[in-house]
Image (cartoon, rainbow, N blue to C red; front, side):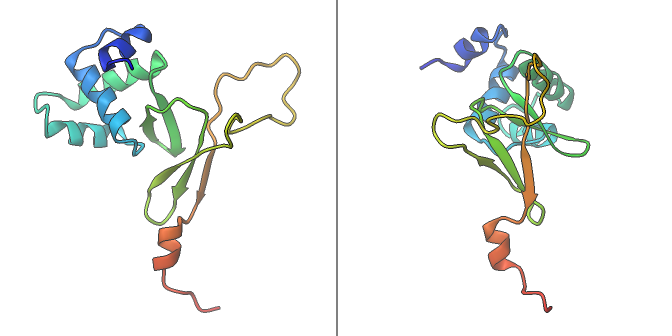
Length: 144
C-alpha cells in the first residue's frame, strides 16, 4: 500500500505538507467537501494553511488526476479522492452527498445513447438529486 507522498508522486505531484494534508483529509473523510469545508477542517491541525493554499492545492490535485472535482450544484465544487467509477446522489433536504456504486465490474454509466462514432468520453459526472431515506423518514407527512 502506497503512502500518501508515494501516491502523490505517482500522479506527478510533489508532496508538500499542505498537499498531503488536503489529500489525506479528502481520502480519509469522503464527505465530498467544498474548498471552504476542507479549509475549516484543516485549520484544526494545520493552523498556518490559508484558504488560497487550499484552493491552489485542490487545483493541482484535480489537474493531475488525484482528485475528482464534482459539480453537483451550481457554482459549488466538491472534491472526491475515490477515483473508482461511481455516481452521486444529493439530498435536497439535508444537503448530504452519497456515493452510488455500480454492480461489480460495471461502470456507473455503461454507455451513452447517441454518442457519435469516434467520439471519446474523458469524464462523466452523474448526479441524482432527491430525498435521502433519513429525510424521508423524518419529514412531516404532507396532506393531499
